Image (cartoon, rainbow, N blue to C red; front, side):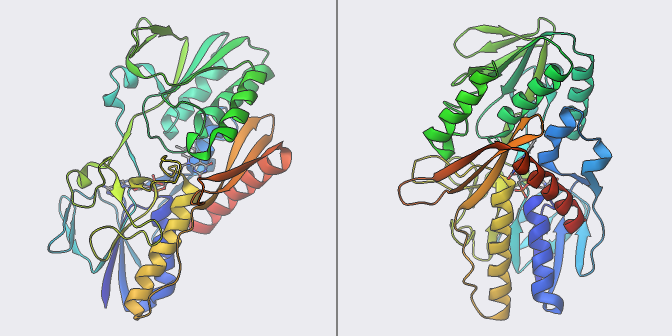
Length: 378
Ligand SMILES: Cc1cc2nc3c(=O)[nH]c(=O)nc-3n(C[C@H](O)[C@H](O)[C@H](O)COP(=O)(O)OP(=O)(O)OC[C@H]3O[C@@H](n4cnc5c(N)ncnc54)[C@H](O)[C@@H]3O)c2cc1C
């Protein structure tokens, strides 16, 4: 019997572990490591932030699954030569390993972030945003992207549209500003998508400050110090924290120059044989020189490929499943509407992405997907 280990029970890890179980049955012992006890469906954090969801509606406790051993502990180290995954008090050997720990958040890398910003990327932070918006009586709301890369390139824009709609519903006069190091919205998707999102921001009077890097935030004076020396003020600060590699992978042999895990884009195998990596922890370069966005839709598809590869190897028949770079994403615009972008990110001439005009239908599809996800995996 082979030992297959998955690290991380988020979007990619959950799919991978379940597919491995279904495909391998008793041929393998499957272990999944997860450091948290519950999973909050990430796309719904945006609805949580504007009072459209309660935490319990989007959060599920990790449950035991037949045929999958769930180890509720943080992985601290991988012993690559002996093929062992380590936690503080356990060592588990593997024949095949799938790395799915996502991107870690490092708020401390932007001084003042933890004290000043409401973190859009955590359930606690999104819940606080909802409470602050309910009490907000007017002024300037800044949505700050602390650094690149960050997951879900649409999220700051969705947050701006949703916050704007929420405040309009309450007849509150607010100035909303997005400050980001990106040169344009969702740059990996190409300039046309960027322009159309900028146009939407303009039509909603949301101020957009691209190519801006914050160096520190002063919570008492409510000012953000920028790299160019300018100081930008805010009344309410919604932040996306700095992202980085989970520390147990620091300095390891599977990293690319940019510090994320390098994989074969089609098979998701790393430079170490029988070790695969999926989702936000990976880096995949595109033909336009930009990286594949860190998004759940890709983590999910990569999980299908990586698990099929492992199943094929254990069964002695190499899988033909290949990750093809196709993906879709919703762009919530408030008032019960969403845009829907679909595309081929591996296209020869660079990503080909098209966005449908925001509609009630796309918003409803997103709602149905949320319900399906929480039913399917929990
Ligand atoms: C607000 C928001 C909205 C989003 N909206 C969308 C959207 O609409 N569409 C879309 O496609 N994507 C969206 N995303 C992005 C999407 O959630 C991520 O890209 C996706 O979850 C990545 O999957 P993953 O498996 O790589 O990592 P994750 O889902 O982050 O899972 C990683 C798991 O590994 C665990 N872990 C980490 N380190 C360790 C360790 N050392 N030991 C044990 N366990 C560990 C973590 O606790 C976590 O559960 C959104 C994200 C956010 C924050």
